[in-house]
Image (cartoon, rainbow, N blue to C red; front, top):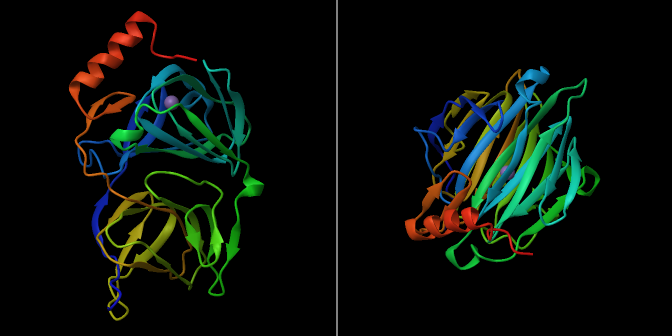
Length: 287
Ligand code: MN
């Protein structure tokens, strides 16, 4: 069978939003243009050197039915939850949190001279895992393998497999790939992505061409942009004068109904009502 390249299906312009207690960020999933990219529910990009854009942070708030993936490029985010977990993630670190049946936590970017930069992705949980106990995978930068390819690309493998190298985040229902890819000027990058899985590239620095096949010129994109990829077996990207850096993310779609209310994502409105009832009654978090 001939391997099919993944062409760009849609290019999404990230939107400026204010979230939490007043954090300015760029959102490209969970917008009017792109509400849900099954199994991905939200993608936020935060980047600022001005403390007024981020110091208010995300004070105590609940989650249920989803996973939140925080990847910090620069600065520091402190977190604390009502189950007694707390810690801090810094440059290059990842926190993959499965909220399951529920957590209440705060996520507070720290004011530092270098500012803050990073991403938060929400991954949906299948119906059968929505009410499982919460789970954290905290991964320090040094535990994330960084590969240098012969053609110059440098890839940090957070989850999924690149060649023989496997990322440290494991046992996630969506069988995701999450890569941080840097392609220097006049280079190329190619990565297999399982057919039938949803995939996107989030370009946050520079520009690159995304190729539908080996012969055509491809589509040139400059960051910050979200490129939703059509189905196929692999992605091919090339650069000209300007290098590019992007997240490459894929995951197995759930094809289940969603009922979404802020930080809760369930399958039915009744489950959302039940969640709000538990919050009111003080029974939302059970230890
Ligand atoms: Mn949160």
